[in-house]
Structure formats: structure tokens, C-alpha cells
Image 1 (cartoon, helix red, strand yellow):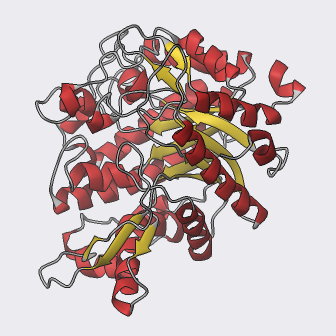
Image 2 (cartoon, rainbow, N blue to C red; image 1 turned 90 degrees about the horizontal axis):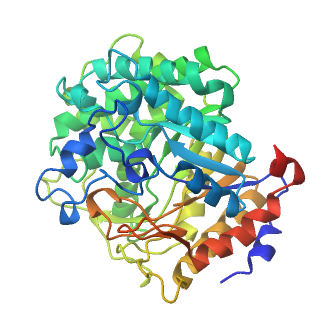
Length: 457
């Protein structure tokens, strides 16, 4: 464990520390004030899709406990809060009438942050697609990109005057591959063709969304949040190194190449070009929008080796053995240096603007004992990774902030409520919140950067 004040001393005075959440994971109130179901409402209520059949129906009841939770954010001493906006609250059917009550909730959220001197970083889409759009094909249907464009316009027209930052999407990799190829997340597809269609629709929606944000709120910096995979080859053999490049194209470059270069990666298209949906004349120009910032979500490395099976589909890789014998309670390998390696690789490969670590954290499931949640392993994880961030800043990477995942324990998608990432423990029976020891450690780090101006803003 690193002393939080000493670690804070390694960062410039304008560096921002924050916390992050997502709408479906914390809000609850799934059927209130005009909200209609999302694909996650439907998916989580299907037998066998989530642990114990858990859903976000109630979650952390944040919708009703907004002021209490904003007070907790302030109590943690952080400068910025990253949250997502629920499309099904704003335009419940994905297209059609706008729900004013949904916009009112985010008015209260943003105004509440401002009253407490907390900067706001909103993500427009963190996986809760209106269920009605799924009937039209969801992300596999090109029409969804234009529905997203209108949604982005609606949100930014109403809220953009008070937002400090906005992102179009959270984790395209999960939306495309985890949800449409691997079937782990909603809508639970296991089809390469559905995934490839979703890939292009999402990329197009991102470009249209950037345009919409700039049209409605040109002063708000706009970006995207990606969970690019930190791909570590099993060996330095030519085969494994070539496999790592294929994996990079499949997992990372199929998003960043069109967004930043206006083209899909060559080997990826050689493998899948004939199965991609139609790429219309201006699509790549629309996708290739200059970003003001980008965010990286990082938890663990992806270790791979060449798969010599001639039947193996591109990228033709298989899982390799983890190097570190340290794992979080969700089974993810702990390896902070892979974070730094990935960031440097991305800046070497792309012309990138300034960045933020928009999610980083660890799953440890210990609960309160006599009112104290001793989660020392989480403190160790956070301190090692934040030290890696400090190394990146010292090395010249334009890294401007760090968001811990998560503010509080919440609905962890297919894992339900059994996996806990929060700095604050949530008792889901009583909704009692308890700041963990990791939250106290993070407070000591973050409050170093709180100035009198931000305290009274």
C-alpha cells in the first residue's frame, strides 16, 4: 500500500480524481416517471442470464436517494463524477416522444453536482438500449445510429449548458463483442454477423453523436470511453507476436481505426470484409470525428497465444496462462504494468488527444464487520494502478484525470449483486451505505486536489 498523500504528490495540481457509476447499475426506479424497459431489463429477467436472476429493478435506489449519494461523492473529496444517462428515461421508445420527467431527473443530478462543487462527466450510452429499438434489430440495425443521434441532440440541448464533459459511448467492445458474439451481455447474441453489423452501427452512431453534441453544446468537450484490451502475447515468438497484432485489430483497432483514421484495419477487413454490413459512401467520414478527449477503462490484461487450428476464426488466438498469481474476487488477474504498456502502445499507434482513466478498480467482496469494511486488497490494487498513472503523466502522456470504479457496490451485469467494486458498501436489503477503508484511502488522495474554489463552486 502506498501512502495516499505521497502518491498525490506525484501528480500536477490540475489533475482530477473522481468516481464513476452507470445508470442501470445504480438507479433502480425501472418503471417510474415514464421510463420504459431497456434491453437489460428484458435480459436480466430471462432465466439463467444473470446470477441469481438479479436485475436492476431497484439496484442502489439511486433515483430516490440522489441527494444522499451526491453528498457521499462530496464526502469522498473527489473533484469530478462520471455517470451515464439512461436513454429509456429520455426517449422511452428510443424514438418518438421525449419524456420530460427523465430529463428533470438529470437536471437535478447535474445541478446537485454543481451545488457541491463537483464537475460532471456524462456518458450518453452505457448499455441500456430502449427495448423497443431491439425489435427493429437493435445495434445490428443501421436505423439505431440515427435514433442515437436524435437522443444525443435531445440530451445536449437540455443538459449541455451544465456539463463539463460528455462521452458518446461506454466500452464499444462490450456492446459489440461481449453482447453480440459471446452472448454474455444483453441482447445475448452469439453471431459474428450480428456483431459485425453492431460494430458498424455503433461506429456510425458515435460519429453522428459527436456531431450532435457539437451542434447543441459546442463548448462541451466530447469524447468516447473504450475498454481497449491490454493484449499480452504468451511468448515473444513470431507466431505469438503476430497473434497479438491480429488480436489488437479485432479487439481495439476495429473501433479506433475508423474513429481516428477513417478506415477499418486491413487484416480485420481481409477476414470479415465480405460479411460486414454495407458501408455507405460517407460513413467513414462521419465516423472519423476529431475528439476532444478519450477515456480508457482498464481492469486486467488479456493474455493470448497463437491458435494453430486451421479452422480457428480471425483473430485465431487462444487464452494463455496469467503471469501473476494474484486475482480479484471476480477472477481477474492483477497487473498494473499492463495499463501503462497499453496506453503507450495506443499513443504510439494513433494521434490521440488528452485522456482520462475513466474506470479502474477491483472486485473484493468483503462486508462490514462492526461497521468497518476492511478491503485492504482494493487499496493495494488502487495504489499500484494510480502509481502507474503517475508514471504515464511523468512520461509525457496527456493524462488528465482518474475515475475509480465504482462509487458504490452495484448491479454488476451478468454477475448480479454478488460482485462488489465499490468504494462504498451497499447493503441491498436496507440500502445502507458504508464508506469502505478503500474509500477513506481514496478520499485522502483525492481531497489533496480540492481547492477553495472547487469547494465553493
